[in-house]
Image (cartoon, rainbow, N blue to C red):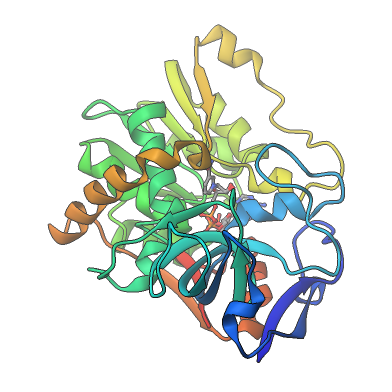
Length: 341
Ligand SMILES: NC(=O)c1ccc[n+]([C@@H]2O[C@H](COP(=O)([O-])OP(=O)(O)OC[C@H]3O[C@@H](n4cnc5c(N)ncnc54)[C@H](OP(=O)(O)O)[C@@H]3O)[C@@H](O)[C@H]2O)c1
Protein backbone atom coordinates (compact mmCIF):
# COMPACT_ATOMS: atom_id res chain seq x y z
CA UNK A 1 0.00 0.00 0.00
CA UNK A 2 1.40 3.44 -0.94
CA UNK A 3 1.53 6.27 1.60
CA UNK A 4 2.12 9.69 0.05
CA UNK A 5 3.51 12.43 2.30
CA UNK A 6 4.69 15.99 1.94
CA UNK A 7 8.14 16.33 3.48
CA UNK A 8 10.07 19.42 4.55
CA UNK A 9 12.61 19.58 1.72
CA UNK A 10 14.20 22.93 2.72
CA UNK A 11 13.90 25.23 5.69
CA UNK A 12 11.79 28.21 4.54
CA UNK A 13 13.45 31.61 4.61
CA UNK A 14 10.80 34.25 5.29
CA UNK A 15 7.48 33.31 3.71
CA UNK A 16 7.32 29.58 2.80
CA UNK A 17 7.63 28.74 -0.94
CA UNK A 18 6.14 25.70 -2.70
CA UNK A 19 9.61 24.19 -3.34
CA UNK A 20 10.35 24.13 0.41
CA UNK A 21 8.10 21.03 0.31
CA UNK A 22 8.32 17.80 -1.72
CA UNK A 23 6.12 14.78 -2.36
CA UNK A 24 7.45 11.50 -0.96
CA UNK A 25 5.90 8.11 -1.75
CA UNK A 26 6.39 5.53 1.03
CA UNK A 27 5.03 2.03 1.62
CA UNK A 28 2.70 0.60 4.25
CA UNK A 29 2.15 -3.13 4.71
CA UNK A 30 -1.12 -4.37 3.10
CA UNK A 31 -2.16 -6.08 6.35
CA UNK A 32 -3.01 -2.99 8.32
CA UNK A 33 -2.60 -4.45 11.83
CA UNK A 34 1.02 -5.22 11.07
CA UNK A 35 1.84 -1.48 10.81
CA UNK A 36 1.12 -0.81 14.48
CA UNK A 37 2.45 -1.80 17.91
CA UNK A 38 0.54 -2.12 21.20
CA UNK A 39 -1.40 1.08 22.06
CA UNK A 40 -1.00 2.50 18.56
CA UNK A 41 -3.62 3.27 15.90
CA UNK A 42 -3.44 3.45 12.10
CA UNK A 43 -5.52 6.26 10.61
CA UNK A 44 -6.43 7.46 7.13
CA UNK A 45 -6.24 11.26 6.90
CA UNK A 46 -8.99 12.65 4.72
CA UNK A 47 -8.47 16.40 5.16
CA UNK A 48 -5.48 18.48 6.20
CA UNK A 49 -5.84 21.77 8.06
CA UNK A 50 -3.35 24.48 7.17
CA UNK A 51 -2.46 26.56 10.21
CA UNK A 52 -0.08 29.49 9.93
CA UNK A 53 1.40 28.77 13.37
CA UNK A 54 3.11 25.60 12.11
CA UNK A 55 5.56 27.81 10.14
CA UNK A 56 7.08 28.55 13.53
CA UNK A 57 8.37 24.97 13.97
CA UNK A 58 9.96 24.78 10.49
CA UNK A 59 13.03 26.72 11.68
CA UNK A 60 16.03 24.72 12.84
CA UNK A 61 16.07 25.87 16.47
CA UNK A 62 12.31 26.27 16.91
CA UNK A 63 11.50 23.42 19.33
CA UNK A 64 9.44 24.29 22.42
CA UNK A 65 6.98 22.74 24.87
CA UNK A 66 4.35 22.38 22.12
CA UNK A 67 6.39 20.73 19.31
CA UNK A 68 10.02 19.91 18.51
CA UNK A 69 11.55 21.64 15.45
CA UNK A 70 10.46 19.75 12.31
CA UNK A 71 13.30 17.62 10.91
CA UNK A 72 14.35 18.08 7.27
CA UNK A 73 13.30 15.21 5.01
CA UNK A 74 10.44 14.16 7.31
CA UNK A 75 6.67 14.64 6.76
CA UNK A 76 5.55 18.12 7.82
CA UNK A 77 3.52 18.24 11.03
CA UNK A 78 -0.02 19.63 10.94
CA UNK A 79 -3.59 19.02 12.01
CA UNK A 80 -5.69 16.48 10.20
CA UNK A 81 -9.11 14.96 10.18
CA UNK A 82 -8.86 11.21 10.05
CA UNK A 83 -10.57 7.87 10.57
CA UNK A 84 -9.22 4.88 12.49
CA UNK A 85 -8.44 1.95 10.15
CA UNK A 86 -6.78 -0.39 12.68
CA UNK A 87 -6.26 -0.16 16.43
CA UNK A 88 -4.26 -1.81 19.19
CA UNK A 89 -5.33 0.89 21.64
CA UNK A 90 -8.49 0.10 23.68
CA UNK A 91 -9.49 3.80 23.71
CA UNK A 92 -10.20 3.75 19.96
CA UNK A 93 -12.43 1.68 17.68
CA UNK A 94 -12.14 1.15 13.96
CA UNK A 95 -14.22 3.89 12.29
CA UNK A 96 -13.66 6.51 15.02
CA UNK A 97 -13.25 9.98 13.53
CA UNK A 98 -10.51 12.13 15.03
CA UNK A 99 -8.98 15.58 14.79
CA UNK A 100 -5.30 15.05 15.49
CA UNK A 101 -1.86 16.53 15.16
CA UNK A 102 -0.25 14.17 12.69
CA UNK A 103 1.65 14.93 9.50
CA UNK A 104 0.86 16.00 5.94
CA UNK A 105 0.35 12.42 4.72
CA UNK A 106 -2.36 10.00 3.64
CA UNK A 107 -1.91 7.48 6.49
CA UNK A 108 -0.46 8.12 9.96
CA UNK A 109 0.30 6.04 13.03
CA UNK A 110 -0.97 7.53 16.30
CA UNK A 111 1.01 6.81 19.46
CA UNK A 112 0.15 7.35 23.14
CA UNK A 113 0.75 11.01 24.03
CA UNK A 114 -0.10 12.32 20.56
CA UNK A 115 -2.50 15.29 20.43
CA UNK A 116 -5.81 13.65 19.46
CA UNK A 117 -9.42 14.88 19.93
CA UNK A 118 -12.27 12.44 19.28
CA UNK A 119 -15.12 13.72 17.10
CA UNK A 120 -18.77 12.68 17.35
CA UNK A 121 -19.57 9.40 15.55
CA UNK A 122 -22.08 11.11 13.28
CA UNK A 123 -20.83 14.48 12.13
CA UNK A 124 -23.66 17.01 12.11
CA UNK A 125 -21.78 19.52 9.93
CA UNK A 126 -19.54 19.18 6.85
CA UNK A 127 -16.34 17.42 7.98
CA UNK A 128 -14.04 20.32 7.13
CA UNK A 129 -15.82 22.41 9.78
CA UNK A 130 -14.20 20.19 12.43
CA UNK A 131 -10.81 21.55 11.34
CA UNK A 132 -12.02 25.15 11.04
CA UNK A 133 -14.90 26.74 12.86
CA UNK A 134 -15.34 23.64 15.10
CA UNK A 135 -11.61 22.89 15.38
CA UNK A 136 -8.55 24.71 16.73
CA UNK A 137 -9.41 27.73 14.62
CA UNK A 138 -12.87 28.30 16.11
CA UNK A 139 -11.57 27.39 19.58
CA UNK A 140 -8.84 30.07 19.33
CA UNK A 141 -11.34 32.75 18.37
CA UNK A 142 -13.68 31.63 21.16
CA UNK A 143 -11.02 31.47 23.92
CA UNK A 144 -9.69 34.89 22.87
CA UNK A 145 -13.12 36.52 23.26
CA UNK A 146 -14.30 34.65 26.35
CA UNK A 147 -11.36 33.78 28.62
CA UNK A 148 -8.65 36.19 27.48
CA UNK A 149 -10.32 39.47 26.46
CA UNK A 150 -14.15 39.33 26.69
CA UNK A 151 -15.76 42.45 25.22
CA UNK A 152 -18.53 44.51 26.79
CA UNK A 153 -21.41 45.56 24.57
CA UNK A 154 -20.50 48.48 22.33
CA UNK A 155 -16.73 48.17 22.84
CA UNK A 156 -14.48 48.29 19.78
CA UNK A 157 -12.73 44.99 19.02
CA UNK A 158 -9.93 45.24 16.44
CA UNK A 159 -8.74 41.98 14.82
CA UNK A 160 -5.66 41.41 12.63
CA UNK A 161 -5.64 38.81 9.80
CA UNK A 162 -9.37 39.35 10.11
CA UNK A 163 -10.31 37.46 6.93
CA UNK A 164 -8.19 34.39 7.74
CA UNK A 165 -9.23 31.25 9.56
CA UNK A 166 -9.17 32.51 13.16
CA UNK A 167 -10.04 36.10 12.23
CA UNK A 168 -13.12 35.20 10.18
CA UNK A 169 -14.65 33.43 13.20
CA UNK A 170 -13.44 35.99 15.77
CA UNK A 171 -15.17 38.88 13.97
CA UNK A 172 -18.48 37.02 13.99
CA UNK A 173 -18.15 36.09 17.69
CA UNK A 174 -17.30 39.70 18.58
CA UNK A 175 -20.59 40.71 16.90
CA UNK A 176 -22.51 37.99 18.78
CA UNK A 177 -21.26 39.60 22.03
CA UNK A 178 -22.51 43.02 20.87
CA UNK A 179 -19.13 44.59 20.16
CA UNK A 180 -18.18 46.84 17.24
CA UNK A 181 -15.85 44.65 15.14
CA UNK A 182 -13.10 46.18 12.99
CA UNK A 183 -10.90 43.91 10.87
CA UNK A 184 -7.44 44.39 9.37
CA UNK A 185 -6.59 42.78 6.03
CA UNK A 186 -4.35 43.30 3.01
CA UNK A 187 -6.40 44.27 -0.05
CA UNK A 188 -9.58 46.15 -1.01
CA UNK A 189 -11.18 42.80 -2.09
CA UNK A 190 -10.47 41.20 1.28
CA UNK A 191 -11.69 44.33 3.11
CA UNK A 192 -14.98 44.06 1.15
CA UNK A 193 -15.19 40.41 2.21
CA UNK A 194 -14.78 41.44 5.88
CA UNK A 195 -17.65 43.90 5.77
CA UNK A 196 -20.02 42.31 3.25
CA UNK A 197 -19.61 38.59 4.07
CA UNK A 198 -18.27 38.38 7.61
CA UNK A 199 -20.28 41.26 9.06
CA UNK A 200 -17.41 43.43 10.33
CA UNK A 201 -18.50 47.02 10.98
CA UNK A 202 -15.39 48.42 9.29
CA UNK A 203 -12.19 47.22 7.64
CA UNK A 204 -8.62 48.52 7.57
CA UNK A 205 -6.24 47.81 4.67
CA UNK A 206 -2.84 47.22 6.31
CA UNK A 207 -1.19 48.33 3.06
CA UNK A 208 -3.01 51.70 3.01
CA UNK A 209 -0.69 54.55 1.89
CA UNK A 210 -1.31 56.58 5.08
CA UNK A 211 0.12 53.73 7.20
CA UNK A 212 -1.59 51.27 9.54
CA UNK A 213 -1.78 53.54 12.60
CA UNK A 214 -3.63 56.28 10.69
CA UNK A 215 -5.90 53.79 8.91
CA UNK A 216 -6.86 52.17 12.25
CA UNK A 217 -7.52 55.61 13.77
CA UNK A 218 -9.94 56.45 10.96
CA UNK A 219 -11.82 53.13 11.37
CA UNK A 220 -11.85 53.31 15.20
CA UNK A 221 -12.72 56.94 16.05
CA UNK A 222 -13.41 56.00 19.71
CA UNK A 223 -10.13 54.09 20.03
CA UNK A 224 -9.59 50.34 20.42
CA UNK A 225 -10.77 48.58 23.58
CA UNK A 226 -9.70 45.05 22.64
CA UNK A 227 -7.14 43.91 20.08
CA UNK A 228 -7.05 40.28 18.94
CA UNK A 229 -3.63 39.91 17.39
CA UNK A 230 -2.77 37.20 14.90
CA UNK A 231 0.24 38.82 13.25
CA UNK A 232 2.44 40.88 15.64
CA UNK A 233 5.07 43.24 14.19
CA UNK A 234 4.08 46.61 12.72
CA UNK A 235 0.36 45.78 12.95
CA UNK A 236 0.64 45.20 16.70
CA UNK A 237 2.58 48.45 17.04
CA UNK A 238 -0.11 50.40 15.15
CA UNK A 239 -2.87 48.80 17.23
CA UNK A 240 -1.14 49.67 20.53
CA UNK A 241 -0.91 53.31 19.37
CA UNK A 242 -4.71 53.33 18.99
CA UNK A 243 -5.60 51.51 22.20
CA UNK A 244 -7.67 53.05 24.94
CA UNK A 245 -6.74 53.24 28.62
CA UNK A 246 -7.04 49.77 30.23
CA UNK A 247 -7.44 48.13 26.82
CA UNK A 248 -6.90 44.37 26.53
CA UNK A 249 -4.84 42.48 23.97
CA UNK A 250 -5.37 38.76 23.28
CA UNK A 251 -2.16 37.51 21.70
CA UNK A 252 -3.31 34.66 19.46
CA UNK A 253 -0.29 34.44 17.18
CA UNK A 254 2.41 36.39 15.37
CA UNK A 255 2.58 35.48 11.66
CA UNK A 256 5.17 38.21 10.93
CA UNK A 257 7.49 36.85 13.62
CA UNK A 258 7.34 33.28 12.24
CA UNK A 259 8.72 34.54 8.93
CA UNK A 260 11.02 37.32 10.19
CA UNK A 261 14.62 37.19 9.06
CA UNK A 262 16.38 38.11 12.31
CA UNK A 263 14.87 39.82 15.36
CA UNK A 264 11.68 41.77 14.54
CA UNK A 265 12.06 45.57 14.88
CA UNK A 266 8.39 46.12 15.79
CA UNK A 267 6.57 46.61 18.08
CA UNK A 268 8.81 49.34 19.52
CA UNK A 269 6.14 51.03 21.66
CA UNK A 270 5.63 48.53 24.48
CA UNK A 271 5.95 51.31 27.07
CA UNK A 272 2.42 52.31 26.02
CA UNK A 273 1.24 49.11 27.73
CA UNK A 274 2.50 50.69 30.97
CA UNK A 275 1.29 54.23 30.40
CA UNK A 276 -2.18 53.12 29.25
CA UNK A 277 -2.42 50.23 31.77
CA UNK A 278 -3.05 47.76 28.94
CA UNK A 279 -3.27 44.03 29.68
CA UNK A 280 -1.78 41.64 27.11
CA UNK A 281 -2.17 37.88 27.45
CA UNK A 282 -1.13 35.05 25.19
CA UNK A 283 -2.67 31.57 25.16
CA UNK A 284 -2.52 28.22 23.37
CA UNK A 285 -5.70 26.28 22.58
CA UNK A 286 -3.53 23.17 22.87
CA UNK A 287 -3.43 23.63 26.68
CA UNK A 288 -7.24 23.86 26.83
CA UNK A 289 -7.87 20.45 25.32
CA UNK A 290 -10.28 19.43 28.10
CA UNK A 291 -12.63 22.34 27.19
CA UNK A 292 -12.93 21.38 23.49
CA UNK A 293 -16.14 19.41 23.74
CA UNK A 294 -18.06 22.11 25.63
CA UNK A 295 -16.78 24.87 23.35
CA UNK A 296 -17.61 22.84 20.26
CA UNK A 297 -21.20 22.52 21.50
CA UNK A 298 -21.47 26.31 21.83
CA UNK A 299 -20.01 26.88 18.35
CA UNK A 300 -22.35 24.21 16.92
CA UNK A 301 -25.40 25.96 18.37
CA UNK A 302 -24.32 29.31 16.89
CA UNK A 303 -23.90 27.56 13.51
CA UNK A 304 -27.33 25.93 13.80
CA UNK A 305 -28.94 29.26 14.76
CA UNK A 306 -27.30 30.94 11.75
CA UNK A 307 -25.30 33.32 13.98
CA UNK A 308 -21.99 31.90 12.77
CA UNK A 309 -20.92 30.96 9.23
CA UNK A 310 -17.92 29.04 7.99
CA UNK A 311 -15.81 30.38 5.11
CA UNK A 312 -13.24 28.08 3.54
CA UNK A 313 -10.37 28.29 1.08
CA UNK A 314 -10.28 24.70 -0.24
CA UNK A 315 -7.76 22.83 -2.38
CA UNK A 316 -7.69 19.14 -3.27
CA UNK A 317 -4.91 16.53 -3.33
CA UNK A 318 -1.90 15.80 -1.14
CA UNK A 319 0.36 17.44 -3.77
CA UNK A 320 -1.35 20.78 -3.05
CA UNK A 321 -0.88 20.85 0.73
CA UNK A 322 2.41 22.83 0.56
CA UNK A 323 0.92 25.19 -2.04
CA UNK A 324 -2.09 25.88 0.20
CA UNK A 325 0.22 26.58 3.15
CA UNK A 326 2.19 29.14 1.08
CA UNK A 327 -1.00 30.86 -0.12
CA UNK A 328 -1.89 31.71 3.49
CA UNK A 329 1.28 33.73 3.91
CA UNK A 330 0.45 35.67 0.75
CA UNK A 331 -3.00 36.45 2.19
CA UNK A 332 -4.72 34.59 -0.68
CA UNK A 333 -7.04 32.70 1.68
CA UNK A 334 -10.51 34.03 2.44
CA UNK A 335 -11.37 32.02 5.56
CA UNK A 336 -10.01 28.66 6.68
CA UNK A 337 -7.50 26.85 4.44
CA UNK A 338 -8.21 23.12 4.09
CA UNK A 339 -6.97 20.49 1.63
CA UNK A 340 -9.17 17.48 0.90
CA UNK A 341 -7.14 14.33 0.30
N1 LIG B 1 -2.80 30.49 20.19
C1 LIG B 1 -3.30 29.42 19.60
O1 LIG B 1 -3.55 28.40 20.23
C2 LIG B 1 -3.55 29.45 18.13
C3 LIG B 1 -4.31 28.46 17.48
C4 LIG B 1 -4.56 28.58 16.11
C5 LIG B 1 -4.00 29.66 15.40
N2 LIG B 1 -3.24 30.57 16.07
C6 LIG B 1 -2.64 31.73 15.39
O2 LIG B 1 -3.64 32.42 14.69
C7 LIG B 1 -3.01 33.17 13.66
C8 LIG B 1 -3.82 32.98 12.38
O3 LIG B 1 -3.61 31.65 11.95
P1 LIG B 1 -4.52 31.00 10.85
O4 LIG B 1 -4.07 29.61 10.72
O5 LIG B 1 -5.92 31.34 11.14
O6 LIG B 1 -4.02 31.76 9.53
P2 LIG B 1 -4.85 32.72 8.59
O7 LIG B 1 -5.25 33.92 9.38
O8 LIG B 1 -5.89 31.94 7.87
O9 LIG B 1 -3.74 33.11 7.52
C9 LIG B 1 -2.69 33.96 7.86
C10 LIG B 1 -3.04 35.42 7.53
O10 LIG B 1 -2.00 36.25 8.00
C11 LIG B 1 -2.00 37.45 7.27
N3 LIG B 1 -0.61 37.81 6.97
C12 LIG B 1 0.29 37.12 6.22
N4 LIG B 1 1.45 37.80 6.18
C13 LIG B 1 1.27 38.91 6.91
C14 LIG B 1 2.10 40.03 7.25
N5 LIG B 1 3.36 40.12 6.79
N6 LIG B 1 1.60 41.02 8.03
C15 LIG B 1 0.33 40.94 8.50
N7 LIG B 1 -0.50 39.91 8.21
C16 LIG B 1 -0.03 38.93 7.43
C17 LIG B 1 -2.78 37.18 5.96
O11 LIG B 1 -4.00 37.94 6.04
P3 LIG B 1 -4.20 39.34 5.29
O12 LIG B 1 -3.38 39.28 4.06
O13 LIG B 1 -5.66 39.36 5.07
O14 LIG B 1 -3.76 40.40 6.25
C18 LIG B 1 -3.10 35.71 6.04
O15 LIG B 1 -4.36 35.40 5.48
C19 LIG B 1 -1.58 32.68 13.56
O16 LIG B 1 -0.74 33.60 14.20
C20 LIG B 1 -1.62 31.38 14.32
O17 LIG B 1 -0.38 31.04 14.89
C21 LIG B 1 -3.01 30.48 17.40
